[in-house]
Image 1 (cartoon, protein in one colour):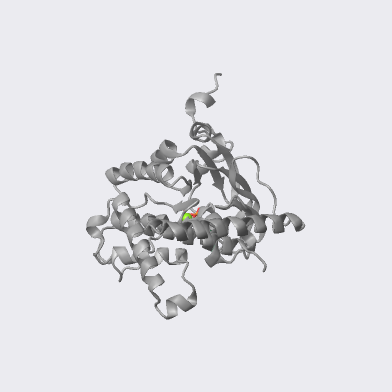
Image 2 (cartoon, protein in one colour; image 1 turned 120 degrees about the vertical axis):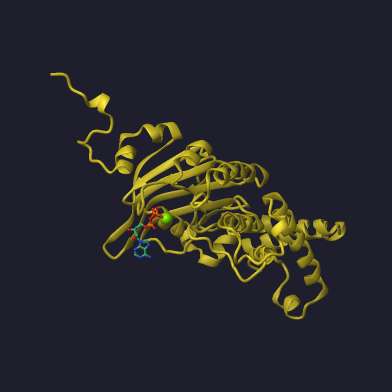
Length: 329
Ligand SMILES: Nc1ncnc2c1ncn2[C@@H]1O[C@H](COP(=O)(O)OP(=O)(O)OP(=O)(O)O)[C@@H](O)[C@H]1O
Ligand SMILES: [Mg+2]
């Protein structure tokens, strides 16, 4: 039988499920099976001509020469950057710079015009994201939020999270169609996970509320909570602070750090709030008109004249800093 990564992953999730249910015998059984098939999978991969490639040490996502054209609009134009495992990485740039388009390419909402996107998934396997279909990217451990909040407003907060957890189910079509007892057990475990996430996010009091009518700050939190239901390896946040007041933004900064620690994941963030970006990001990539300006530490990016020019909308010959440019006669 051909062994796929998805099969190994399903066995691993089933072992975790039995662990949470406290059924030791089945936990061990599925762990052993997952290990066995994982080894077979690794061997099968090794015997194939290399389609993927290794990423540099410590890199979880490599974006290389990425281009996304919409007719004559070059939204992303030859952009390259690396995101390292466990860091908070910021992507900044003026309006229309191409930030959301980069996210849409990584998550395969758009198929890039050119360029490569390699990602190291939960099993340590390097995946060519361009070969993934959009609804399977999540299974590799990449989850995202949207610039315009996308929650199901007609459902309760808890149900929004339960829906997000549905790809984690290990029950097959047969079990689900016939509502076999195992499905009930699995639903219970996913529900408990959702309650834990709500507690972590400070949303427990809203769990039975319909999302419609809830304040914007809470909706944004629900969106982030949903990403935590999907065993995230890389969380992509598109303008999480937009529309939040100063207090909420300060709280968000703490929350993003806590998520990184607690869920042991990497965070890729687009944000216009420079205070937040400079405070929480380990490294930042600045872009303008789809092209790279600089990748560096917050201090390096802040001091870069090209970044200042892009944000202030002035050309190379214009003055940014009167003191520096004052010439003595
Ligand atoms: N689906 C699309 N069809 C045509 N043009 C698009 C599409 N998506 C984005 N663009 C164009 O690509 C460019 C980059 O847009 P994008 O939304 O990625 O910018 P952004 O950096 O996220 O901006 P903002 O900070 O305002 O969110 C813009 O000129 C935009 O009009
Ligand atoms: Mg955008």
